[in-house]
Length: 211
Image 1 (cartoon, rainbow, N blue to C red):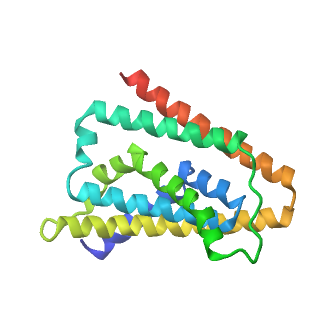
Image 2: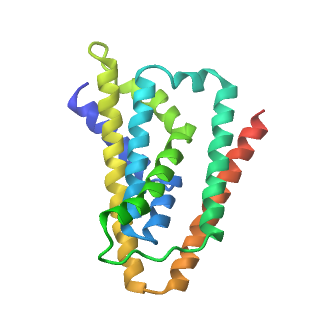
């Protein structure tokens, strides 16, 4: 793979990263609670991209492309999970922020659910897998290690998405601290929850229509 083709792939990654989607909404939602939770969700999304790259690299994700049933099932599961996250954000009570002197265990326990949500949201999004299946092979060299190159491209996409989500989290946290209005924060969280639920309904419904 040449430098020019790698830079072209990076450009595609930037476009994909800045396109609004479930991962960015999750990062925003958790950042409104605590910036470390938003960063944890961002890391989960980045790791999910790397795992998709590994699946494509060993050929497992191609089953989704070849099997319409597998694709629809994954699509429905992903839609239901987005609906669950949306309802949780819309109806769930907003947890109190951890104090500034909270211990590492308290911060870690608050970040684990966010990390898992980011990871699952990415892994249950078949469009991410199809991106790797459709786009990544165009950048693979004719000679050399296909798996190693796939992992390099996956790490590149994951890193670009992580950088974008981290910036998004920091901006959201700064805005939240500047506003310092629980009602505004709660309205923003409910709005993100409603959007997540709507995305989930649309994803699941489109999978059902395809059957």
